[in-house]
Image (cartoon, rainbow, N blue to C red; front, side):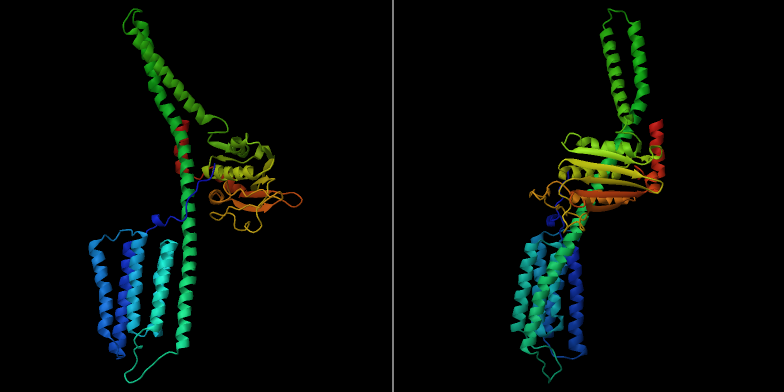
Amino acid sequence: MPEQAFPSHGFGARRLKLDTLVRLRWLAIIGQTATVVFVRFWLEYPMPIGLCLAAIALSAWLNLFIKIRYPSSLRLQGRTAALLLAYDVLQLSVLLSLTGGLQNPFAVLIIVPVIVSATTLAPRLTVMLGGLVIAAVTALALWHMPLPWPEGETFSMPFLYVVGFWLALVSAVFFMGVYAFRVSEEARQLADALTATELVLAREQHLWALDGLAAAAAHELGTPLATIALVTKELERELPADSPYAEDIALLRSQSQRCRDILGKLTSLSTEPGQHIDRLPVSHMLAEVVEPHADTGIDIQVKFVGDRDSEPVGRRNPSILYGIGNLVENAVDFAETTVEVTAVWNADEVALTIADDGPGFASEVIDHIGEPYVTTRARTTEGLEDHEAGGLGLGFFIAKTLLERTGARLALSNREAPEHGAIVRIVWPRDAMDRLGISGRSDERKGLESHSMDS
């Protein structure tokens, strides 16, 4: 099955919630008010308390207006969220300019809006907000009122120290912004990949469920259709040949027979060997996985090592079928002439090896393959281009995740020189393969499905 692209940079789909900004601003208002009141009335340091409280009150009024005007569940567009964060930067800059500028130890809090933006907004908006913060700290380094200090005493940091603090803040804006963006972007990619995994698994389980429903429908509808066929046959026998209803009765009987034929096909699909059976040996599973790639021009060799009388047999599992199918497809995409699929089993484990004669895994990324969106393979000595468009990115992550959920362990390696190609080894404990084999449903659901199929 070819991979589907799931964009990881969908910032429009991850809009910042208005209530989040409101709550953060209330927290800042409480902290600012407590600090100003403590310094002015407890420490009794002279400071422009009226202007400071006015700046804080403006934020409080803005929060109240937003709370009344807009619902808390509103998701903000990127530009609107950036404007609100820019306001927070300017409001804190005003407070700092009234209380010592960069000499105020709370000046470090001015980088918080940049971190919030980096985790939720597009890089362009974060860069613009970072530029505003740098401009603000530059202005605070040059123009500000004295730092509140005991009356009759003065305290002033050396200008060289202020320059150093300015450099520290600018560096923090850059490094913290980039770091927060990378961490949140990896989380976004992982969330997208996990969502894709769940969608793929749900689709496979849905198709499997439809197979059972088809068999159940064929069974349930068979009896009434047989009754209809019997009644029409009797009516056709009773009516005279020249009856005006004879043609209609014949048509009714032919259509009922056609319905029975259609239901018979549905039943045969549910019992067709190697495709829609409930119990699936490893050999049949590999035949089902390999069959779609028979006409690709690549020689796919399937080998079995083990006692055929003790071959693992289990119930169908969409996770295993999709996971192995994706790995085989990747091997076929990168192979030059041959793909070898080898199944080995004993009393302790069941192992499956998929090897191709393609360029192999690139040495610089082999340790990271299996993470979302890692898609690079090595180039061949003839300079063949990477097959980045076809596999080993999100699809490999999905396959690895689904297989590991069934108890499997995956190991990746390259063939030893002078041979070339990639090797993927999948190993299940024998008891896990016999138990899950080919199913991950609860015993109760298995029983219901078996009842519906047997009935």
